[in-house]
Image 1 (cartoon, chains in turn cyan, red):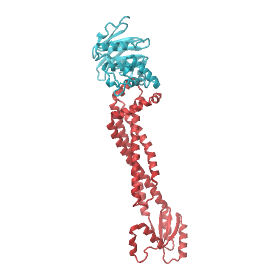
Image 2 (tube, chains in turn brown, orange):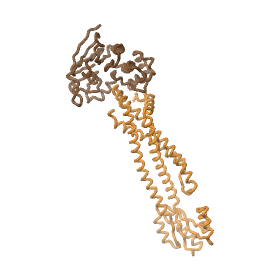
Image 3 (tube, chains in turn orange, green):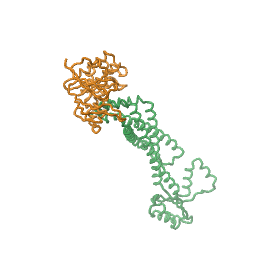
Image 4 (cartoon, chains in turn blue, brown):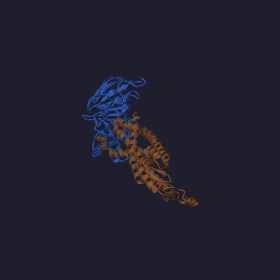
Length: 224
Length: 295
């Protein structure tokens, strides 16, 4: 699913963000990317989403090379991803249902199918009763759930969540992590970045990637 | 393209949201495009009307040929027959002095009282010659050489002046069409750019979710199209009302001007304005979208 070999990322002003990253993520894998603020977690996820391109090395996501020359193909690759953004990126002035459906509208599904899939996703995140509420009337935790519903309703092969627990209290944060990990299955891998390492202590059957100073270390925890 | 057709309802809702979120700017745009299109509609209608008037006047081009007073009736009839044979002459007949007097009474209307001050009829008989306007010069030359012709009066100067006015209107028409086209493109692309800027976060999110550019751009295209169509419709309605008013005003003091039927002018103007405004709307939106691809 993800294959990175010697990946480096430097921003246009010359600031180094990531240095010689080598990793692979397989289908059905749960990966936590941790590290302090500014360590490069979000940069790594931006690379996985095709928002940034490696300045050195080779990166392949779902079989697609991530490079400027493949911009058009990367747009199509994004349709197979389930991104959950740190700041939610929900569309204001629209209902919860509209926001979830928006992520699927260009995937060539019929309008009735869109509504059905969005409804199922909202039920999974426990927000079916708020389907017709405007997103600006939701709490922080609810917004995060809508963002997750939008990501999973697309039936993605790879879920990429950037700091989904940021600004949430511990209980809500744990609920969100539990919810996200529940979408991992044989075909779908889940990659979650978080600086709150205390939330993932004791997590079983997952991969921990620690990013620090642009480099990574990898650790595999055992099954339950 | 399938996702475009499947999401028609969504696009209309997005357009409504785009209007609602930036309504002051959109109303101002509607007013500006409506006024610009109104100007265009009036110039084009004026152009058509002047062309039609010119055509009518051309068809009724006449010369007055005054003959030697010593000519007897037979001589006058022979002269009329000779005039009819000249190339470019469409018809000729004698207007008696009394008929000339009556015509002037009709033209002067209330002011015809001035003719009562004359002891005798001040008008003489003449031959009225209908001609093709483009043959004025050769006809004049033949008439001057014709025996029995004392004087020739033509309205060439008036016709030439009318022709010049029509040509000026035509050039002005082209200039105004170009100016209106460019202004509409600039205004629309500006409003579309503004719309894109206001919605840059949404556009960026859609791109991150993998939405195709056509899907992202479609609501903006629709908004631009609707704005100009509305502007064109308002302008056409306003121009129709104004034309009716102008026709009403001209019917009294200038009844002799052969204006084309008002219904036909309004129908042609509306038929042109709506597709033209739609085309300019799409072009302006595309221009705005292309210039704001960075969002």
